[in-house]
Length: 451
Image (cartoon, rainbow, N blue to C red; front, side):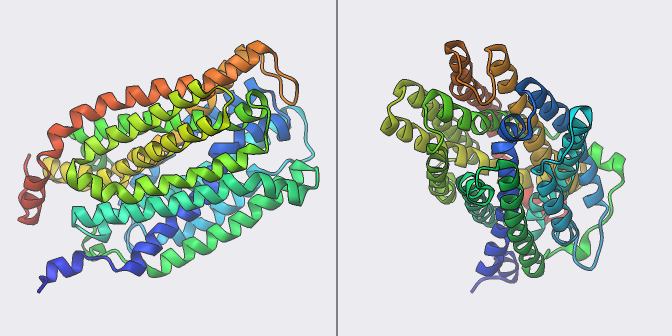
């Protein structure tokens, strides 16, 4: 018979599904931002590619600062709903509203139009951090069992991938349907529909999830939260690798529409290619099995390798659609694995920080490890290709020169390969700390704090 501790650590299926809904709702909106905002700004909103890329970088880097702030806020939150869970209720509507406004084109011009784009994008990003940080920070409080955390994280990633699939696959067809040739109108209506669905998902998750140790949560002073970083090498390693991953992924996703419209010559393939990305679910679902037969750090390295290999195959393919699809499938499986692992491993680095310093700053550590990496990575991932494409002479809504096509190919193919490969390096060093996890769990269970 299972012990009381084992039973308390077991999360029922309905809560696993509710946890999955959090990332489904988040990705349903955020993946439209990461995948289509550069294209929206240049070809719909009316900004030059250089201006759009600079705007994406500056707003993302400024916006990324709010990640540790939200971490501090969560670490100081103590309510009858728990520490992380209430933010699904409090932030879902603001996040939805500002995302819709980000994809709305007002009757403005010049500087005023740029200011509008900047403010709506920043506010949408702040709200996203406010609702995405709790998705990660709540995981250590749903169960103390690391295997159960991996399972929960797999549910979350599958749910997130479903949200991503819906967003990137259906947004352009919906824009065409509701816009009737007016893409500005089409984007506003389509994003509004997705926003309503996302709010419903977050409200279901809020109603069903439960933080098992919420009564034990204590507010942590800001200085103590910052101190939790000291000596937490596995966290620093994981943050480095995750940041690199999101830069590479955003470069790939933000330039896909350009590559297929101009280099392949068929923009209508974009929803199909994005639809195929649902194959990421396969890699995500297999993660618990892969981890059992190998390790967490090697599983993430495997994901990076597959992601880079997929890009190489697409380069070799040229304009051969069947080979491009093969490369895309392999790359998506790899990116699905590499995307998923940090969110599960962050919980382990929170444990390490508590074991090392006696401070359990789950909000602060997971905020930087997840939201900061996503947002800073998205900013850099949008900026890098915009500057490359601008330097190679890209002109929105025009026939591209041979040089311009090379710039798009470099952005979509080469840059992600390079960054995915670089991301492997920090994970090689993570194995040293992964070996200590059993001892750390044992020490924490016995309330032993190691200075």
